[in-house]
Image 1 (spheres, rainbow over the protein chains, first blue to last red):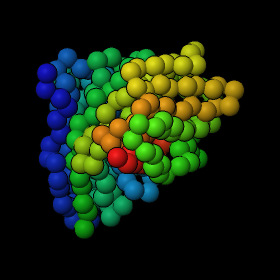
Image 2 (cartoon, rainbow over the protein chains, first blue to last red; image 1 turned 180 degrees about the vertical axis):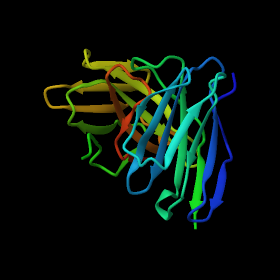
Image 3 (cartoon, each protein chain N blue to C red; image 1 turned 90 degrees about the vertical axis):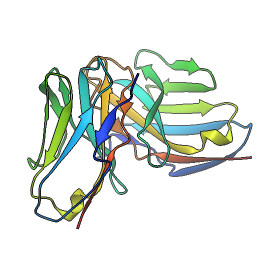
Image 4 (tube, each protein chain N blue to C red; image 1 turned 45 degrees about the vertical axis):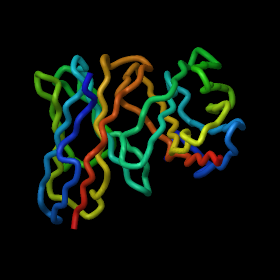
Amino acid sequence: KAGVTQTPRYLIKTRGQQVTLSCSPISGHRSVSWYQQTPGQGLQFLFEYFSETQRNKGNFPGRFSGRQFSNSRSEMNVSTLELGDSALYLCASSLIATGGGEQYFGPGTRLTVT
Amino acid sequence: DQQVKQNSPSLSVQEGRISILNCDYTNSMFDYFLWYKKYPAEGPTFLISISSIKDKNEDGRFTVFLNKSAKHLSLHIVPSQPGDSAVYFCAANYGGSQGNLIFGKGTKLSVKP
């Protein structure tokens, strides 16, 4: 079974631009979550989607948004990029959206804002 | 305010010995606690989890202990192997939602041959 895939793997953008990152979950998984990893803050939860509905949202500004499609693929968008948005963005999928089961993480998209 | 804390940024252990990684939390509403391992340039990989109604869960060389009164959990790796060298993250979630994980900042484990 193919794992979680994220595209692109690396991205360089300029301050003020916007960016869209894509995540394809493991086949059959309906829950997708996004996380931001930075050296100072560690891994921080952005949002979670299940069956095309946002279930939870972390403490990030409205410039960060996401969506999930009917095939469970998800995208996240960051508008008006700031230097501080430079980070590794990780996507994770799980079969269900409740309980303590594991989430499967993708390799991440490394975003650099200059 | 950090809800999940890993106070040791790094840990060095000899091969064959026990590795003990610690994690403290502040939110008594957490339902599940999980440990993830992360190698450079890869996403985190799930290791083991424990429900808040249990105090121990074991899977091969990995055992997680939960002390709810102290709001503390630990991951024991016995015996430690060089391939265990990685960054270990403690995480927790609550409200029945699996996708909303609160992570600690990680502990870098180095297992020396």
